[in-house]
Amino acid sequence: MPEFLLERGRPQEALAASQELVKCRWAMGRFAGHSLAGRALLALDRIEDARSELALAEQEMEHLPAQVIKSLQDTVMLRAEIMLREKNWDKGNVLMQQVEEQVVAVPGPDAWSGPSCSLIPLPGSHEISATGPSGVHCAEDDPA
Image (cartoon, rainbow, N blue to C red; front, side, top):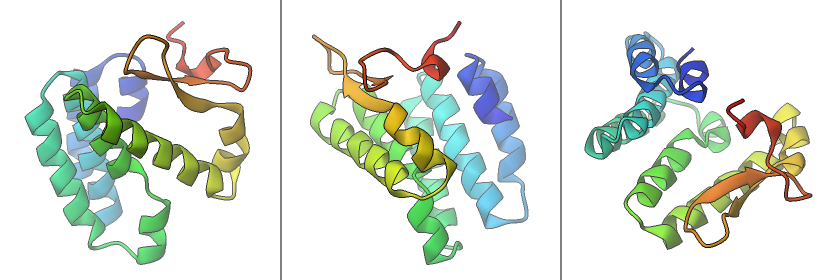
């Protein structure tokens, strides 16, 4: 639910929904809650609070099996987004590229859709955007 709300530009509601996940009795739920709370806080321009949620998500990762951790890119993506917000373009873009490579490398539906959509720098900017192989923005990234 928090991700759905974030994708629709409703970060305050996403933050509230992610706080429910943080109360979960399982580490995976708490991990997801903290990761999504961090994304919501970034959308609200609360970078320090997002950084705190990142640290909490990383703590929850310590309770997850190593095989599960390998497939999780939430904290790497959140760290990259924080770096980009702080105008640390080089490190942020490198992390985003790593996320893309990791997602494409994982077998399953995400890997199948991965090649149809990739992260590229926007011309004249330090921001990145998701586009398809033809350079056309992916439909799922358009707010329409």
